[in-house]
Image (cartoon, rainbow, N blue to C red; front, side, top):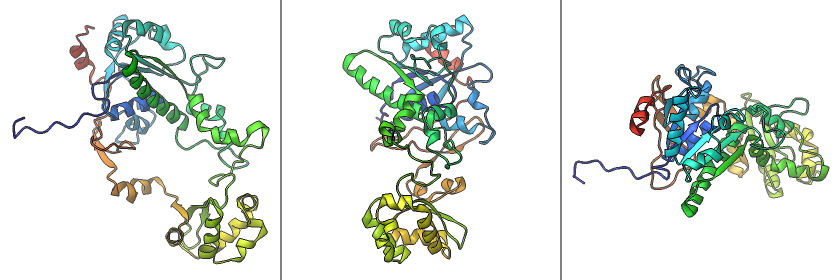
Length: 391
């Protein structure tokens, strides 16, 4: 290397891995963005003109969709009309060169296009095919359409969130996130297995099954017909005090929690300043405190009524009681811990640069990949020329 030649950055874990993704919405795009974060080259196949419909749900980020900018950085956009025989043939040619093919079309659509596992593996035995769907590739629910809220309902999470009188969905699309992260980890596992066998495999990722795994605690809580966890709003369903408490001086809210009797004694002594509560039969253990949470909440908030939230948080921290501030989005944007750990970078978009969080989790010895979010069809011609495909 010449002295004035810049050093090449070290390779990322998936450098040299080609992913072709026929993707839309959130689950599959989130999966492939994670792969791109690790260095994979992701060719995102989009509809000519409009592209992924998820580009258009809102205009919150420089006139671009908040969902889309979250899940689509570091990709190349290739527009193909899959109703056109030449474009469909071009897609199949790209898949023959790929290491991974990801798709989350409507149930059965990929198979009707000749993009099912049984067909694709004949042209590329090393190919990993990942199908992401609502309910999986078999079973009585196979052909049902599935969106995040519907899977939250089917998986039982709506029965555990909200208040006793009103169920509430999670504020983020957790069924899509669960399926996307399950697909991501499964693809990594398949690539590791391919190193041993030399062959690819078929991955069948279900949103319902991904969320059912996340629901294992409440499922076991209700084992053999026992009472399921009650809907407790932002409180813990069975541990108390564990949840939000109002402070009076500034109208704020703090979150606190304790999980053992030692912490409860410290809380009574140093925060509530009332040793009698330790001996109060209503609060003698976690179960009784949970049953009598209304009375205990009143005692705690009466103690906090003349204090500001930051003062309460300071007292809790000094006493070693787990605590958190209930932040709004503007406060998360400016969170001091994210700032101190250098978690924010910038990425390009078709409408200008925007801040973006680095991928959660980072290995020593490699830099994260934070490449631009593509415009619709931005890379179509270059990819066709590179791969020698005629349209």
